[in-house]
Length: 189
Image 1 (cartoon, rainbow, N blue to C red):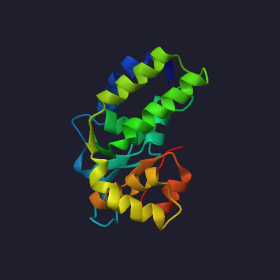
Image 2: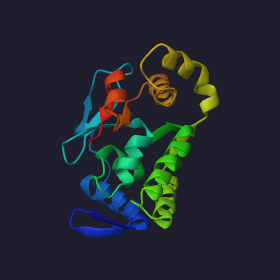
Image 3: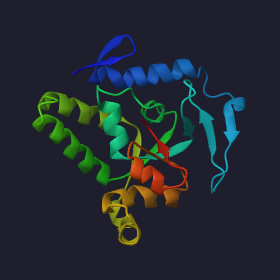
């Protein structure tokens, strides 16, 4: 698969290396102390502006499948928060259902002839290389059921919401409805 990122053409396999290189160049020697701004959240987690200044990135985030699919898609620029997770600059968390949701989305791309099966496999491999901590859905299930049953969220979205709430960190999503339902969520365009 060939992706265009800026003026460069990259294969999916090269994309993770590009994420890490761009993040390192934007933040040489890590993040300076002055780049951290306190933001009012439940735990007062530290957030920082991305190099592009278009999104705020926390020290740790929950990422949902829609944000990852957007990052893998050649039709969209990579969200800064996903670049930061892929580069290891931000700790990424997700419920383990993200794998099934990502496989489902990639299969839809293949069936729609948007991607070849080889490209979908490369996307899955790239996702697997992200330093992402997966949390067992079985430990989140009871709370996710309660959230889904008492709100407009799907059961799948409820897993991401309850994980973000439990860890007291922002959720990064490309889903406007989910972002609107969870205070502090970061919507990626």
